Length: 640
Image (cartoon, rainbow, N blue to C red; front, side, top):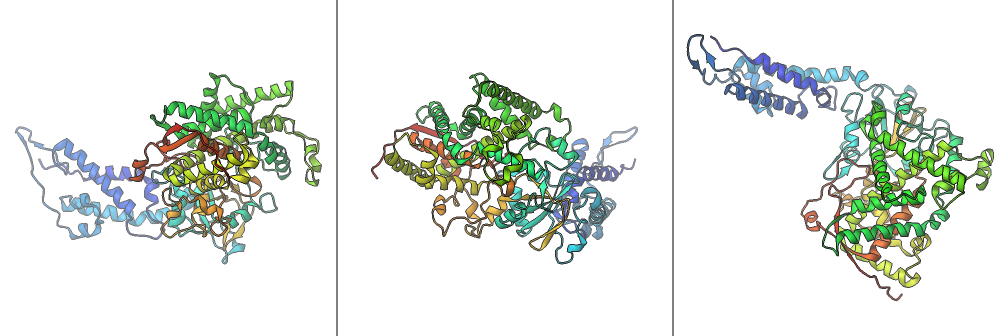
């Protein structure tokens, strides 16, 4: 009739939890020789013990799990409280942050649990070090001896999950900053090194910060010993990624000569002159979007989410200007939905792993977009060119490009596959990123009414000088410096976190450390903007949406951000659609300032700390979509 001992069940429960939580437990200590339990281990033990005690209490009514004893031929009896543990070893061995574990009543169970916890705390760091080559291959042992000891490996951040590495941290975000918060936080945690070692999907990765270092390092792409595109030359993983990411594009093409040829012909349709010709179409799309905004807001009485308005505008530009598609009202929503599905699928775990990709909605969305583009190409070949960017790519030949650089490829055209893939890249660059930046600009202008009024005043002066009809790219560039400052300041505070990675084809020394051959390389835009010495403040307020938004800093050489402003990348793969992206954002903000009186629907909530950010997005975005109240107004020109 002695009560049964429940410690084996407790040990099994806690042990199973630790095993299933092995990735997080293994990351509890940065030093492989740490022998004391770290907070992650302590919290794991505490939560496991608490769950065990709760389960035993619910079953038996006793926190230690002893059942109510039933004598074979007698009534049920309660053994009552068990004696308090007397083992000083047990109490001393357990971490002080485990109140649940410290209260286990029998000395034998306390001692065994303490010994188990101490053993785990001792063994796991050693096990972590021993299993490094298995869980994170080539991260710690790939240094090139010829560069040692003067150029050691860079500081290495906690690689977290085996094989997947920092994937979940890098792709996630926080409600206080949004997507990409990890890129800033890991840099700060490691002391802001210019080169930081991380791990992602079976490959070590170096995150590079600093504008000059980024431009020098990535500017060497295609040079002998320089980095090459990860997406274009990653072997089997690259083949899986190519199912969604366009391989025959300026984003992925690994061959130097073909990339240069492709960039010339695609770029010929995106020159400042070509973008200037598209200004009337951009204005028409912006006015249609603002009209819908005012209609939905019903005279400023109903809130409308600016995220949806901005996405509709940039998708309209992608559909009409980039692709030249003339879709019906029934077809347009399907196009927008498929673009959104494909873009967000690019950054999913399934895309990175390649498992079951053909069944993924993003894969079907990409096939839909490819079919629409190919239908348009057939129409252009049958009926001749039009004003779309796609038309420029279809009919461009290298004869139109001057200079000796294009002599070898003169007279050649892009293949059909290259036209389709580069059109997809332009949709990606010209819709999602521009829409996110415009959404953030609306938030920042709403939080800073003085900046909004200054933007409105600039448009008044421009209308007085040029009239209401002259909203061209040249006019915006020459007469609207503040609107340019608003766009750039928005991109500085909430930028894209990183860009397409490259692969180091040879070991190289960078800023006192080495990047071994085979490592991936990516630029850390978020940390680079954070560390810009021209704008950085000790309290970090220069990156805060309430305290750091100062567009006027761009109007003075003394305060203008330095070369550390790199929102669109660097090197030979610098964003090819930058001219179009800047033009569409400036036109939209100009039309917005001329047509409506804008204010935030939740401005008071934001001031009281109610602003939260989405944890998953390409560029950080407010979680609520930025609801606004829009009232129509007529902007009168003022005398110059």
